[in-house]
Amino acid sequence: MTRMTFTGRIKTALYRVAVPVAVRRLHAAARAAASVEALVDLTFRFRCLGLSLKPAQVRSEILALAQLVAQRRPATVLEIGTARGGTLFLFSQLAAKSARLVSVDLPEGPFGGGYPERRNPFYEGFKGPAQSLTLVRADSHSPDTLARVRGLLGGQPVDFLFIDGDHSLAGVRQDFEMYSPLLRPGGLLAFHDIVPGRPELVGGVPDFWQEIKGRYQTQELVADWRQGGYGIGVVTL
Image: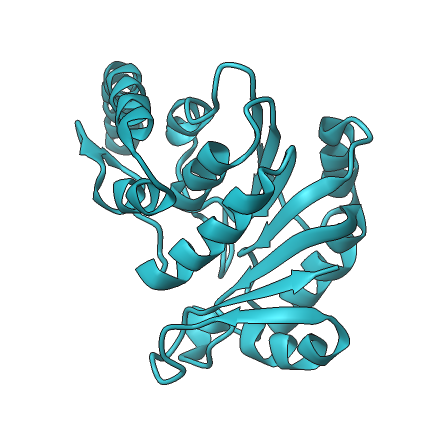
């Protein structure tokens, strides 16, 4: 047995102990949150036994998106790009009590590798008692992944789609072309990283946003266009 394998086993064992405690504390804190703003703050500050879920977001931008999602209480949520789980937790809290949530994440690649598999039980613990939540660790661009997502949705259209996965121009375009048809008429779609910045951070998302924003009803949730990345583009289809 290699040292790396031994270290991985130790970390997994520690996670098994920490996750149930962290999930209980997280849900208790969420129940105590009196507003959408309080829920957003919780995602940024929560830490328990080494587990945290701070999203890679500008607080004011994700708050504005959270308020839009809360108004709709979506029954079906699809997220492309799980990363640290902050947005997944937030969306689970803002969705309908019986919502179906699916989060797709690429285990490796330039814009992949968002989380180790041992974090699965933590993320799966985000769901409410009547909700379903499925993590799909696969390439969102694969036809097999799309077919699996369709099956998990059980024929139901998507109410809210959040695209924050492969940031290459071809990648974000493909995610849009493959998954936006799953949205119901009037459904909400959001892209992260529409503000120009370093290529390794934003990829081609700002360019793609400029391509499509004139074709749809859109809203730009941006704290500062000079911030060098981040920014959320919202599309109503």
